[in-house]
Image (tube, rainbow, N blue to C red; front, side):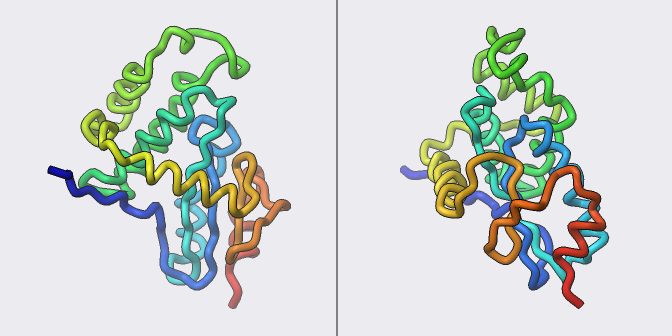
Length: 185
């Protein structure tokens, strides 16, 4: 018997201006961009913009695939996108526990994927093991990867406004600058 599940889309707001944010969860610049999204939605107004979070796994962040799968697994749980967001926040707040020194060394060399899942569960307060094991959850991971590639996204963070890549937007920009680019009164 096949278990029915649904990954909640990682979308906030419902406005006409669409801001797509491609993030790798352990990237420090992605974490900085992620930390600005709530403020962006508050300043711009959810009736004026739509934020779509796209997960962009990158192989030099060695546990990226495991962590992206955890985020998408969380989106299948009660709370959906809010659960996924809490996993992203937990990873961003404890980034050093999910990353390797200079992408190739340090204590995480001895960590297993199960260790990483347990850390995320501890920091997020969510039980992810069952959802992580959904056999075809990889279709969600593949969708995010394929969508990024189709739009020419190669690294994170990356940004699109209304379907167009915005190479001049940075995670270091103040939120007010993002609002000015997105809100068209």
